[in-house]
Length: 386
Image 1: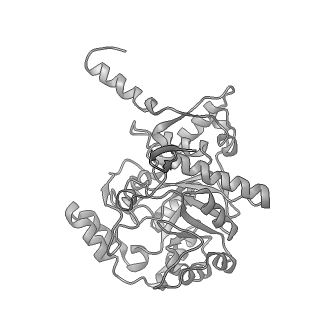
Image 2: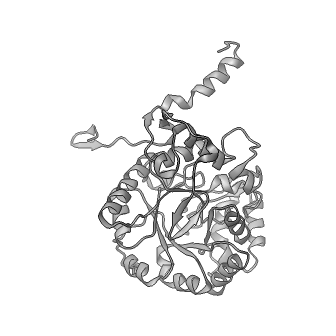
Image 3: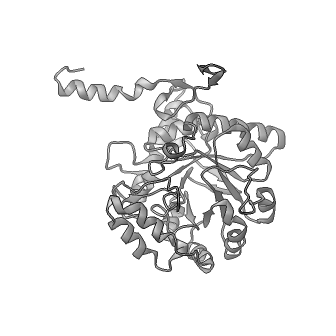
């Protein structure tokens, strides 16, 4: 399998969102009649959208609003929300920095130590306002932060690194034992990120309640450019969902696949579900919400890395409320608003009554389909008509 790229080396062809399209079904359904709910860790959500654990996307206010709308938002325990009692001042400074100053300023701001009492406080604030409290940290902090969040009333804990594996080798610190950690925690544990069948399967076998898939595809992440690693999201989702289905057949336990990053429009979201996702985790489209704490800016979780920052602060603007971004009415024509409406309409056209049926729809390789609209617009400008 694969093509020769040199003497003795083959490379497998993989696909991203821009290279595929979905084929309409023989039966169509009223979008109002499709079910887009999903379950994660025993909690049922009305919509399969998760807001990324990024400081420009999720704070307490955003998490509560996302819960009210039927989705889930994950709060970053390694960020400004747990380093500063008043994070708004810090977020203002990051938003006001020049592009040249931004990364260095973020590195400086994230040198402030994490305060463990703020972990519990943020969880309690979300719960007191009626939200689902999901929190995230890097693997090195999981054994320390997990029990604090659980005791404070967190509903879900996410262990998230740029690349996460069951077997991790280090001579400078003791790696977290993910299997032991999952057994210790009394709340669901979601683990990521990975991109391969074998790693996804291994994470399921140690007790993960959900798997985050995707390395470096996000708009604010530069991992692929800095480290040269990653797999396009369509192929990643198909491969890891195959591991989910195999694990389910073998054990009877269904572990949701969450495609994380790289989706900018409703069309990208629809393709992720057709490739096998049970839910999607999104950053930049939600960073555009007026409720987002980034003030119209968005930056990656690895932007603050002391020696090798793998992210950048980008300006995404503020295009509407979170409700408008999820449910409309859309105020922009680039497909980044009314994401739930786009998903339901696509499912209706594909004849999919629920997410599981969406995962069975036909996908074709069609890179040229992305240019058709642009070609029409160009022809109109130069007077060629259709």
